[in-house]
Length: 391
Ligand code: ADP
Ligand code: MG
Ligand code: MG
Ligand code: MG
Image: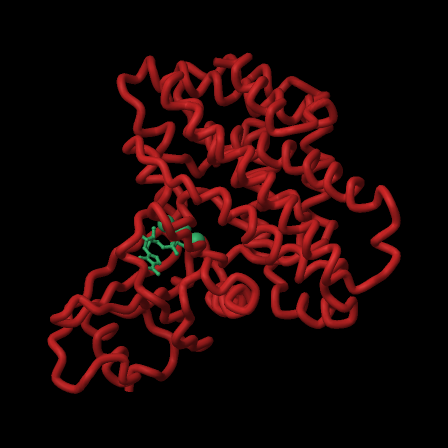
């Protein structure tokens, strides 16, 4: 049987497994394609003759990094499955349905979202998804509130935390977001034309001190269950629907981290747009934060587990601390996606070279300003002003 010990699936064994698990009617004509990008995970899309499909995502026991293979825990598939199940209870409309998980095989079988598009790809083509940030704000508020000590009984929270102990995936973030881009690490990857700006960054002790503080927050501040990798490549969308995928980095961390990663990825798009097309993208910054605050406040008023949180001024304190850290995290994300190991297509797909390098310089300068001015930036309008300064 296919359901035994771990082995990477192939297109044909994936079909066999789907049949064994009775996902399709007897005698269906099935076809299967591996559609992942293949660095960490396999993603199989299986459809029948009516184009009704499922997705089988399987973790590989290694990550392909700069031509080399690094061992990487299969347990992340279980974390991903557990996160999606938790999210199904909090934001059922904003995640794919999970049909089946298997810890030994490191697989999650889930709803086929092929009718939607990865938001990053759509944005790069100049599309917009007007409701995307409204939904993401709601997603952030509900997933973060109900897994934090504000919205979840504190004993229950500690139990839930045990399902999301994710040291190896956290280490990737610790290294690639908070450490490697800030010194001359082998993992960095950038155009030689950027070197002198990058050397300035490496020499900036004030900047590095702020990044060290953000890294400490990431390491120690287990406020709520994070998605952990909430960039626009982890969001499927169309005009009406939004679905968040790929939560294998989930763990209990600082609330501002998911928000900051989303902000940063909106900012990449903003950097690439012409002035007349920029507004619809930057609008997602405002809409995401407003939607987050509105939903979080409602939950706070109606579902707080402790009365003391209603003390005047306390929620404002939580929002301002969260916003400040989100700004710093956004800055780190912008820098690491520009010069670190893992890039974003928003920037890398820009040609000719001079234009791409020009925009990457702006990205570096924006990332740096966000980190250094996190205290002064009070609102998403202030982020937009900062963006205008670097453009
Ligand atoms: P990875 O962790 O390797 O980045 P993802 O979960 O992001 O894997 O999936 C990789 C790609 O597979 C996505 O960009 C998307 O194109 C496709 N994919 C993943 N999940 C689904 C789904 N539920 N429905 C349709 N396509 C999917
Ligand atoms: Mg991928
Ligand atoms: Mg992933
Ligand atoms: Mg992904």
